[in-house]
Image 1 (cartoon, rainbow over the protein chains, first blue to last red):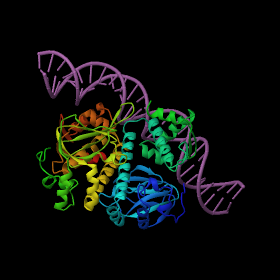
Image 2 (tube, chains in turn brown, blue, orange, green):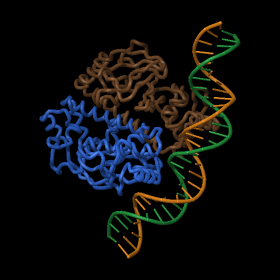
Image 3 (tube, rainbow over the protein chains, first blue to last red):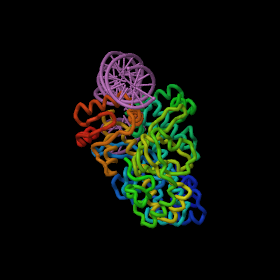
Image 4 (cartoon, chains in turn yellow, orange, blue, cyan):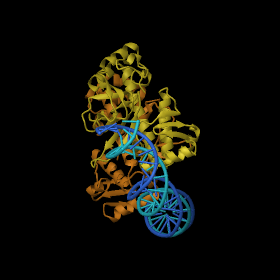
Length: 235
Length: 235
DNA sequence: CGTAGTTTTGATGTCAGTCAAAATGTGTGG
DNA sequence: CCACACATTTTGACTGACATCAAAACTACG
């Protein structure tokens, strides 16, 4: 999941076309790269930011994966989503300037820090950047809508199938295999995200294995029949 | 729910501070108002836009209320949310230029049409407008996250209480009563939104009535004890 | 007043949650 | 490298909340 070394810039990042630089001219990308403060290294279970904290940066995933969750007043967590390379984190904090969820690393990885103070100014200078940032906010909205559909009215089996298909599609878009990947999150995280219990997640995985739809060993999944998985979601 | 006549501009719209004009100077609001194409009147069950359609405008609710939903390949609908005055609709369509959901009027009302072609140009000219548009996109993201929490792992009773509290809070923010309002959506819409059946919605309403938490007659709700409602959500 | 649509109420069934325990995996220090 | 402790995952038996099916009550509108 490591794309570039610690020192590479937006100019030669292979994720550029999926990230903020998309559609910009080279000199514009250079300006953007100048404000990217650091490629911060993250280790497993390390917090990138905590709900309520003042938000001074947006974050882009360079490598690794992350989990975002909301904690209610009783301390109960609800996982909001998982972030993969090229995706922006913290987009819900524009509204009031504070993070509305917490985000934690699921494995070692790198994030690009984008200081909001400088990003806003740059957007005014580069219309293409403003447009692309809006596209990425819009993408987050569409993705959240998909999650609402996912949680709305589906059986445990359908939720599990949809979850695997969502990951498959996103890994595919990144240029990885869409049929073979590692689950960087624990069963507990999957269950919490889908509104299920770990027992149900485990049982549904067992059924999918038994039917030959997937091969699963620990955290490595192989999807043997993508169409069968799609058929579970929409029969 | 009717705030202004058909002809009023952003300059004297009482929703201005909750909508795009927030934070702008008077001459900037004037520029924004010039690009607002029309205050389109809508009647009950009329579609504002349909999923898949090319998106050429954003829409702001001036009066009335709306329901957005996603239709899957089998024609099954999932309601994504309800929109009240001052809220922007169609924000998920920036990404690819097409509407990602359909939106229909729940009652007669008015919407302000914002042509994307001219809005983008104006954002480049007015940094405050760009910022406010981003804030509103961010607000939609936060609101969607709340919906994910709502659907994630809650009982029917908790979902119903949360639903009422969400409406209460939004009506309150608009300057209306937060304890007495009309449900512009049918039971069917509430059920579909919450991932429940109409029977369960009806039964849960009955329980809340019996406990004296709410008074309900047709579509008019009165919340007798807001704290009790909050206690149902977080005991 | 009658018909169609919506909402409420009742009886029954089922899927996923809960509780409990076994199995497997992970890490640490001797 | 093994032994032990601890965390995570899997499996099993039972329970309960919500869905489903069915019908009655209410509402709206011509």
